[in-house]
Figure 1 (cartoon, rainbow, N blue to C red):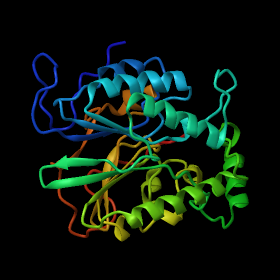
Figure 2 (figure 1 turned 180 degrees about the vertical axis):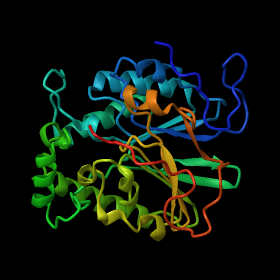
Figure 3 (figure 1 turned 45 degrees about the horizontal axis):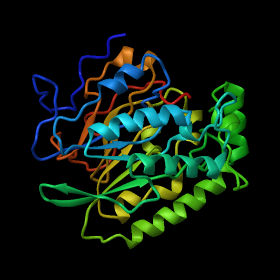
Figure 4 (figure 1 turned 180 degrees about the horizontal axis):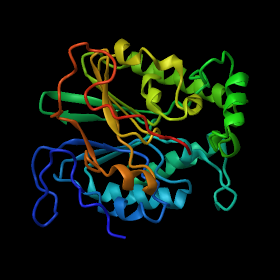
Length: 322
């Protein structure tokens, strides 16, 4: 397979020989590489910086097996000045034929150690400071999960919402492959992660702006364009709905939905940066490039109403059905 012919981030010139150039770097982002999928592997292999100072955020769903995660993150760590990773649900799956049969927290801890061997920053590390042209910006990788509070329309409890999903046949594989141990449930694990992350963000110097980068969206609104609203219950938690307002946030990066776009909420830019599965990117292409430039920001300003979806919103799409 020949990878798509758009290896540069939106707005970034590509050197004639494809090699990184010296100079001021960019903060780039990507998610949902799904590197174990054969047609996605050439995409991972094609990802290149355009400067020897480019940083890269990888916002989850690199692959399921640690061996594939190591391959992809190791390749990127060799190319980019700094790589920052946060897990998606796929990294946390324990699939039957995986040689690494760790589950839950133990699996996450194993991946954190793998990343540290590669020199990749994780949610367990201090927030690195990206040296932006207007001063440093802290990159906060978030591992938060979900707590079933983005419930299916017309339902009021987790049980009701899950019943709707099972009846419609739209059930996330997390229900079978993502084990929360030692926490009793995935929502318990989520709440523990949210509480610890909230504490760290509150302790951060408010004078240094933040880029919040996680796999799941911080607010529910981005899920409104999915064809299957039942799937939203595996897409985040209401506990983070005000973080982009409470903290000094310059941008939010996320994936998971497989709906790459830019939206604005309360004047804050949200970037969904996923690659997704071949059936998805073959249909929509990569109009924004494979890597999204987060900073310096060169896109359209916030819409006048300063809330809701910005001009880059797309029509309803299946999105996030894995």
